[in-house]
Length: 196
Image 1 (cartoon, one colour):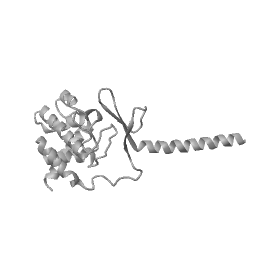
Image 2 (cartoon, one colour):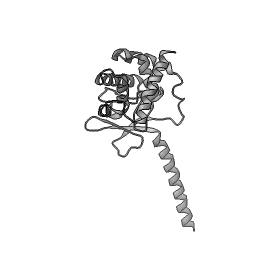
Image 3 (spheres, rainbow, N blue to C red):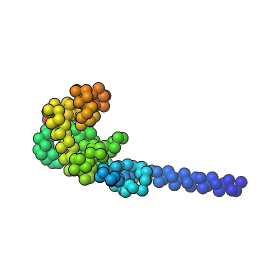
C-alpha cells in the first residue's frame, strides 16, 4: 500500500513538472540554420540543433493594433523604396498581423507581414520580428509579385497570400476562400486608410 502511494506521488510530481515545462516551452520560439543556410523556427524543438530565438514572457502583451500609426514611418519608407501605395502596404499589414510585430501564424509565418521562414534569407531579413526588416522584406516581395503579374493588383495580392505558382495555374485569384477573403479585406482596408 505504501509503495503504491509513493508511486502515485511520483506520477503526480512527474505530471506537474511535465505540464510546467510544456507550458514554458510553448511560449518560446527556437531556431536552427541548416546546411543550406535556411532558418527553421519552432515552438517545440525536436533536437538539440535548435537554439532559443525568442522567449515569451508569461505576462500577455497588450493587444496588437491598439496603435495602428506606430509603424507609419517604416511603412512609408518601404512604400517609397518599392513604389507601392502607403495605404495598400498598411492594409496588407493590418490583414496579415493586425500590427503585431511578434505574430506567428499556424503555418509559421512571422512578423508584421507574415513572412514564411523559408523566405527570410531570400528577402534579406535577419530578424523577422524586427518591424524594419520585416516590412522592408515583405514590401520587396510584394513588389516582385506586382511585377510578375504585370501590375494586376488582385493577382499580386493573391500571390502574396497563396503563392505565385498557384495564381499562375488559375490565371486569376484562386478559388480558395482564405485567399479570396484576403484580397477582399486588403482592398477594403486600402480604401479605408485612403479616406481617414
